[in-house]
Structure formats: structure tokens, C-alpha cells
Image 1 (cartoon, rainbow, N blue to C red):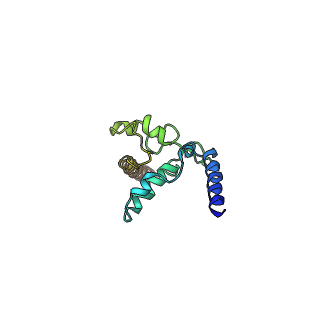
Image 2 (spheres, one colour):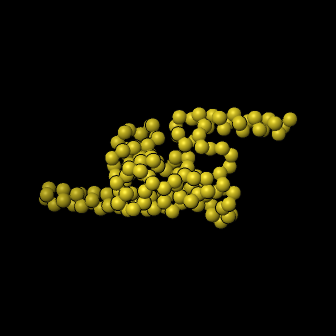
Image 3 (cartoon, rainbow, N blue to C red):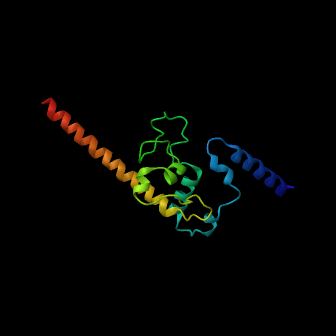
Amino acid sequence: LRERDIEVDEQERGEEVRMSRSCGRYERVNGVPRYIGVCKRNEGKRLVRIARWRCGNEERGNRYWMNEEERKCRLCGRERETVEHMRRECEYVRDKGERGRDVLNEDGRGIGWMEMIERLRKEKEREREREGIEIERERVCVSE
């Protein structure tokens, strides 16, 4: 009886997750993904990275509490930042030569793409910081 209750509980919870409107990819969730079963014990950071991307935590497009400008792509700044946008439409990613891959697959093969996007975001953030510092220096020089 207890096993049956657990099974019914899992089905109900799974249905709620799949019906969620906050992330369209939840409908792909069914059981435990393969990448969790094949990862070794010392690959915790890898597991966390894949999980964050698969559940949508690494994209700003679904963050309804942010204004529209903050939800735009951190790389190109044109459209809402979603995995689909970065895979297919983002010019910044296209210029780097990585496009159209299935990165949210069951076995975690997209980890290299995920790492590349995170690296590009850091580079872009550093560029913006440098530009901000240079603009501030120009303002100080002009006002003196």
C-alpha cells in the first residue's frame, strides 16, 4: 500500500511539473535523467550546471518578475534570453561558431556548449565593465 501511495504521489507531482507554465521544457521531464545516473561522485559541479540549464535557471527570459529590458539576452541584448534564442538566433553565439545543438538532452552532452555560453557571458560582462570605467573617466576629464 505504501509503495502505491508513493507511486501515485510521484505521478501527481510529475503532472503538476509538466503543466507548469513557467518553463515549457518541464513537459520533457519524466523520471530521473540519464546524466544523473552516469555521472561519477566527483562530478557534482557538472551535475549542477546541467540541472540549472535544463530547469531554466540559466536563462532570464522566463523571469516574469523582471522588466522586459532585464530579460533580454546578456550576449546580444536583442531578444528574451532563452536557450532556444541562444541556440538558434543569438548573433553573438553564431559569431563564435556554436549554433543549433540539442543542449538539453537526457545524457548531458551539451555541457561544453553550456560552459562556452557561461564563458562568453563573463567576457561580455568584463567588456561592459571596462566600457563603463572608460565612460566614467571621460566624464571626470570633461567636468574638470
